[in-house]
Image (cartoon, rainbow, N blue to C red; front, side, top):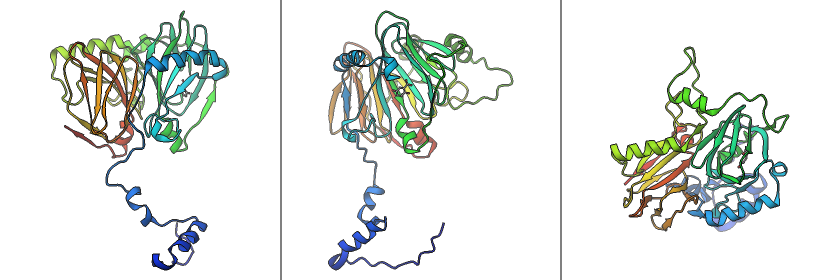
Length: 356
Ligand code: GTQ
């Protein structure tokens, strides 16, 4: 849209009147690009997030304590958000991804709602937890990767005897940036009627048995629980029988069986096995990455920063465009869960990586 304003030729004259000129501009809600050009259009990305580890040994106690501070019913979702120290109090773990630790106690229900943000759950601890997605229920066991697609009804509960805790990964910062957030409450705390169990979903889609007339290429995988027991078995098999990826170790990515693409439209998730004594090559990519320790004693080295030892259920953030590599100590294979918003970059033609 062209404005009807006359075009004024502005000649910069810093010596005499640059300050007042800037003041005039500010009054007009405009600003000179030449002050900020190299920041606005940088030579390479400069994420604000810093490398950071949230230690399970510390976080677990605080999460359990949160159970005495607020009930799941009061909180709707009892979550401690992981705020990257480089981001000045934003509820983001990387510059562009949200992560939180959620607790649900025996007998509690986190009531049903839906929102346009997509969520993943990576289960850290506990037995008896479940989540329902559009009426289909799945149990939550440690290491399971669970998807809550955008705008699907979901409630969580705990039929067990102890606390259940997991990591939430959401595309909240992206949806906030795009001003595309919507949320609705379900009429009741849990969803009725129940429409079956995730096992049936898994059997059908994981065995590539699709309806004859299905044209569904849903942007989110119809499989919404990828159980750790199966993932671990596949990693073991790959470790025995295939070449290791120099940067990613033995790896599997969680795929949408309808498309072969990522399981979620905005988030890429994968599991890595680093054989004992192995160190990967350096890897660098634009997106920030969240890692969770699952087994063994991996460490992550970020070039120019240092090495971080990762214990079980520690959550670690590698900022975008860092050069980083993983290693496993000499005594145990290490397993790490990894997620990022790589699909967003890919879809926009912004994805870049460097190996080695
Ligand atoms: O479980 O639905 O960490 O709506 C943040 C927002 C979890 C959830 C979060 C949510 C949820």
